[in-house]
Image 1 (tube, rainbow, N blue to C red):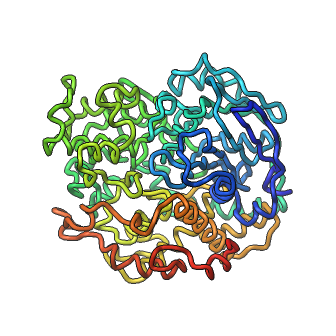
Image 2: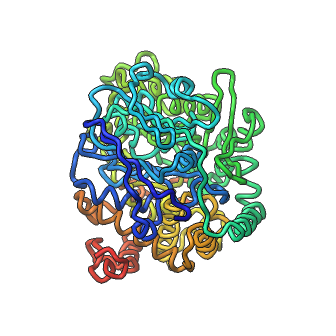
Length: 595
């Protein structure tokens, strides 16, 4: 078996049993790995209608065939479960080295079932696997937990923080301290099972079908990544925060909870300013030539990050121009183990609730949540991470918060997941990806910012509607394959479907074309859709917040525009082979082998 280790670890915390399942290689090839295979296994093994925080839910940690190989960026893994934040399928991606280490321990994935009576952690040393007492690390922050459980340089630690322990629906799964499978509340599912951490040690090798061809592919891919202006220049130099000024210049940098799209102090929180004042070093993931990760330091904190979306969430979305406070907020999100996007967006929603007079009875403890108040933002982030006071009310995300005050419309979410740092009123294709994303408001399920703003692979008019549904479908399908392969999405700035087919063939031993890659991605996208439909979602959930559909952008280059979802969605459904209710037709399911 090439590219795969051939084993999936199955751990039942209720029964305290550990067994090893043989990987179904035909199933693995059909769903690739990672996001695709994990979703297939979850759909087969749970009722999509279950309570995500019940013992009946399962959480799956799944690698792709390229995880742990010499392929550039081959270190990604996925966390798949039913989301406690949105109720949709959750498949959250993380980098670093933990995913590769799991392959080196001999496993393609881990399926965790049931619930432990007391806090435990899982220790994997190749064939030696134990469920161990975690009482000595329960309640501790992510960095301290990692330091305690780290054995040596061949050991990697994945853990939750207090956010996951306290079942915050924005809780993340963290690895190598500052790497996050951040979105959809996957950390809360670990917390609901009393599973604090998974410690992995291993030095095995991933077998490759054609090592010579793999080396040639890797060299070619690396050269393409280095020659590309985004992956070879922008991201290595300034990290993802290089986008701050670019997005602001297009009038789509969401400001004050999406009330505007231009932030006057954008340069104060830009990637250029971050590099000039706070950058210590680049912090690349496993086998990554892009090295977009940042390691930063202020007078108060130091560590990994922040990413562009984090800078936006605690920056312009909260009206804050203090970059040190934003870095501090990022640090504490990592320590508590909570998603920076949902955390910042929830604080922004609270600020607008206060601005509009809905929080007059809240005790702000001398730290009023006003737009632009950096000190209060960090103060209430701590309260959110600890579930204290008003922070407890914010800890389950902006939708729960805003619903409690009768202003659901102030939650900038799709299917319960907060949408990130690009106002869809000024990027029509990207807005369609938000509305149709299977895990809710997500920018990395089809990154249309690439053609609509960055001009890769072609420059599209960001306000034009023609052909956008087709572009969105292709981007979504390609992304589904990449997420399932174990590679980083950022490689798609420089690589295309044919490149991924060549890489996959050399590692696994198949004879795929670029069309096969896209068809696999389409199969994965449709099985996710099937999960959500079975969970109770309908076409009415493929929408955007009312503000973005009805309230024209008030300022800047996008002034006067709204998102025209009603004109794009019917064509998108048709291209997908879904009926007008957003349900895949039997013909399309048969074509994809999903009947």
